[in-house]
Length: 117
Image (cartoon, rainbow, N blue to C red; front, side):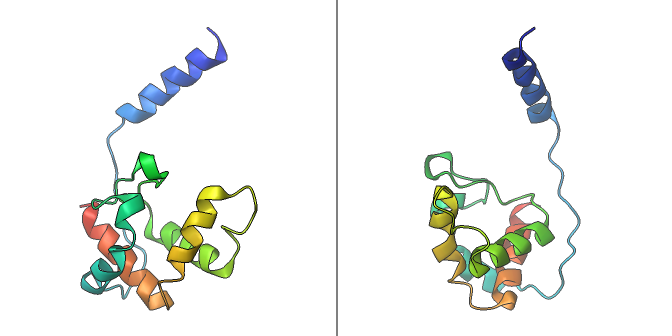
């Protein structure tokens, strides 16, 4: 069995596993306010936050809240989305700037959490 066949078998197995929703770790997010901010996310990540392959937008629903917060902070700080080879990150970085505060980030993440339920 060659490497590509092994990768295909493993990918099929992982895809067959049931989705899990990680327990929330962040406090203080307001999903109602987050829904307003999420309007800018829909084109790339989908209305259900399950991703949009045509826009290279990965799924957000089901991701750990701490991970989403860290990535938004990284985009906003220029840790992500500023390297010449990071084409999708460069596309995401301006959208992170629409979230003016960490509270706004927590709000949109709280809304995304409701889509995972």
